[in-house]
Amino acid sequence: MDRICAAALAASFTALALAACSAPPRAQSADFAAQARRIHADLPVFDGHNDLPGAIRERTFENFDTCDIGAARAEFHTDLPRLIAGGVGAQFWSVYVPASTERTGDALERTLEQCDLVHRMAARYPQFLELAANSDDVERIRASGKVASLLGIEGGYSIENSLAALRMFHTLGVRYMTLTHNDTTAWADSATDEPKHGGLSEFGERVVREMNRIGMLVDISHVSHACMDDVLRISSAPVIASHSSAYALAPHPRNVPDDILVRVAHNGGLVMVNFASGFIVRENAEKTANLTQERRRIAQQYPDPAERAEHLRALQDSLQLRRGELRDVVDHIEHIARIAGVDHVGLGSDFDGVGMLPEGLDDVADYPGVTAELLARGWSERDVRKVLGENALRVLRAAEREAQRLQQAR
Image (tube, rainbow, N blue to C red; front, side, top):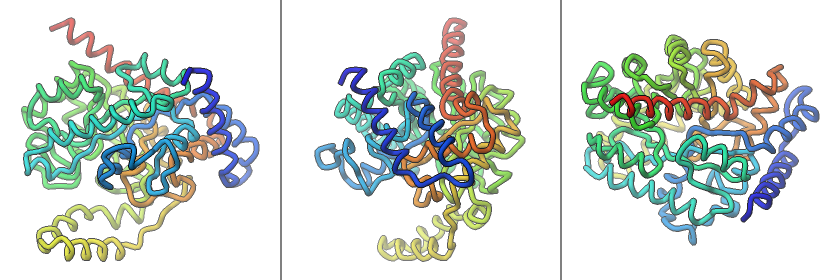
């Protein structure tokens, strides 16, 4: 599809999505929805984390004949028409594989398969998606009305302790790596596991420096406070938290505390707010702060899969979590902007990677609601655009410049 047709398609889907949305709260409905429509027609959103590739694989839909995401898919938060309708112009697709693959020894292989899935997705839907290698590509692809697609590894175990593997993933289009997931790795401490390294091991420090050198963003979502400290001490390039919210508002170890927010600002980095109900609602965060450890305990106590699943469901039901609302997400955006500055906050939805989302953010078509709420709170359009995507583009470009500098210096 040529650029004019793609842009027309994007504008059409955007109008449909906004028309279908319920009226925004308070006095923001008509004026702010119209302003949001105009902003999103430019496809400015650059989202830091979407787990659609993993959701596709979990359902064993390994090909796009049996899982056509070019049409509506009720089982997912994401399909391509809704992605365009939400005004998304660039997306980091998570190529997540479970932390258990570090123990089974197939982390690298399975991550390669996830990278392959994203490449095949872009090839299958060229009218919607195009792979981007750098910030210039992102701008060009967004201007064409399509979604610039980049890859993000979620869990440093995917490289199997190999800097060569890290470099090869960069060649495949991976532009960030989350250093851990829920489990501490052989070289980095997780926020939701017992620490082993006091942050980063010596090899972990080498990983961060090599990521700086090749132009891959270092992602501090999921890592421990000490690991965040080490990364910010070592990294000469801006870092990101691709899908984390503010600890001060929701005290979950997955969220970023204020002292780290200040240091991220000094580093020139970016915290991209997670939409998951468990990470944005205070009482949810308090209830789920130790949930990962409880799940580990159940997994060890009940080796039978059916029995284990039953106890995990009972645990989840006992929490009685509250969905929260879109405004809770915007509260996190505003808090990070107050502490770190408006240049250091973005969006990292975690769509298709979480089980519960706030009211008003049911799927990827709902980003305009965030825009309308920010405008209703008095945000300037200039600052809204920074949050929606300009900050992410700036950080990506800065990491590329630093990589060029390091490569020339060495």
